[in-house]
Structures are given as C-alpha cells and as structure tokens.
Image (cartoon, rainbow, N blue to C red):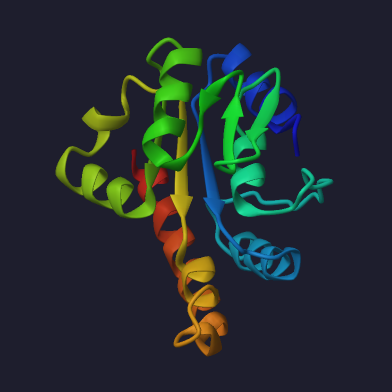
Amino acid sequence: QRDFFQNVIKPYIDKETAVFVIISDALRYESGEELCSRLLQTDKCEAKIEPMVATLPTYTKAGMASLLPHKELSCDIESNAIFADNQSVEGTAARNTLLATVLNGKGCAVTFEEFRQKTTEFGRDWVKPFKVVYVYHNAIDKAGDDNVSESKVFEATEQAFKDIQDILKTIYNM
C-alpha cells in the first residue's frame, strides 16, 4: 500500500494520461471482488482486483496517507496526526493541498459529494487542469462507525457500489 502512488499512479503520470483514484473507506476485499465482477459486466469497463499489504497500523488515517505521493510517512503520537513528508494529510483539504503541491497544480482530492457537485455544475471544465484526481467515498465506514447505523453496513455497501458506478459513468462522459 505504501508504494501505491509510485507503482500504480506514477506510470499514468509519466505517460501524461489522466487517472482517477476512487477510495471507498471500509470497502473490504470481498466487496471489491463483487464490485469488480459488476464492472466487468459493463461494456465500457475493464476491471481487476489486486491485493495489497496494508500499512501498519491498519487504520483509516494511515491507509489514506499511504495511498498518496510521499517519501516518508510519520505520525505524531500525541495528536495521532499523520504526515506525508512532514505535511499533514488529515482530511480531504490537506490531501488536496499535498496533491496540488506534488503535482504542480495538476492533482486534487475531493469527497464524493464534492465530485458529484463539481462535475454537475462545471463538468469537463472542472477536471481539465488535473492529471490525477482522488475521490474519497465514505458511506460504508460512516454506517459502520455509528451504533445506530452499523446494522446497515450491507445496505451502505450496495449504495457504495452504485455511487462508484456513477462516478465511473461521470468519468467516462468527461
């Protein structure tokens, strides 16, 4: 996982091909297999799934940070904050700043809700300057983290499948 950007994303950048990274928090491998199977049933998609060794400790902040461009990850023990090359990557805004900085303004990070709003409002014009777009989706983790909604994780997973397919349709159309 810690080499994701270098091994998976950088080759696209080197070929000057735009790439979208969709990160769905708490989407487990088995659910990923199901999503991959559904995507393969569409005529506009090639899909494959490959396991990765997780960053330790295996919790959201570390995992999210490890998928970003970095040479070194660190953690402030007292605040539990995660840093990529001494730059905070806490939250989407900080990840956006890191991607914009590392990719000279040609990278960004947005939430699923922001992506949906920006692509609806601005369409292709919004995405034109970017070579790398990270889209963060959080429906499954959000459902599982709340005692009231944790029984709805399977419904949230199904919704995540639909949301990801909607993201892909939007990307195809751009």
